Image 1 (cartoon, rainbow, N blue to C red):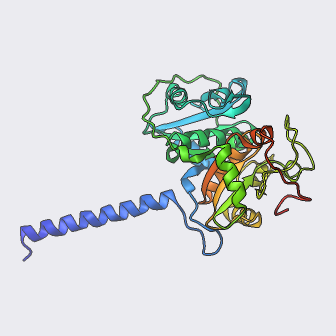
Image 2: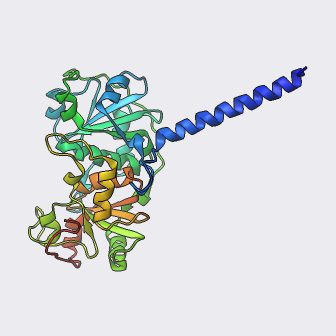
Length: 323
């Protein structure tokens, strides 16, 4: 006969086993290991949600959908039900003549508090420009220490509408919150640090990634309002739109295909990736994708605009790397 004490021990053991299983399942939700050899790291699957997932979870109590756009008209014309609008100008400002810089953390904190974001929120982001502004918002939340709470809507409003899902023009009532933030300044690279990275040159431990179109990277064309041609020395190139299937179907390419693109661009499995572009918008998307693929990633926010203003070295190439 099993004693009461033994039965208690068995029950405790069963409970601990259940907790271990539950913990393991939670870990599986965070990352998903693809077949061996297909991608360098486990994919961070929680960074991306499908339209089907969002439709099923749209009324979850902790869900916050954010619509990021330059003008409120983008959201007024029809938005995902319950989506709260955040104008780009509130999370990317002009400072010292450089556009799209991060505002002070205290300002950003208030922006997301007004949008009803709490520390318990699951934040889903979509935007105009095929998700580019949503990626910028993700980078901003990552800087605030809230990246683990956020995800991009794969395919954005374009896919949502193509599937004839519910659209609303109602402005949702939002209750402001109080956020606790833990800054993650390591994700932001300044010009002085970028100069050191460039001097190191490309290596298996470091990759500088230019997210501009191939012509701007190679020096064949100039970026808007930039008088210097070419790219930061030792940088490679993945144009941010090349992460998407197409402009008509702006979903991310499959992880194995994305991984191949980044490997073809010369980015090693264990490399730390530092993204940049003209002023930190296009590079936000490469930042998001590189992190999604499992890389350790940072961003040079002031990008080639400031690099050029300081008359720092630039390289030209016949074609973009990996093209």
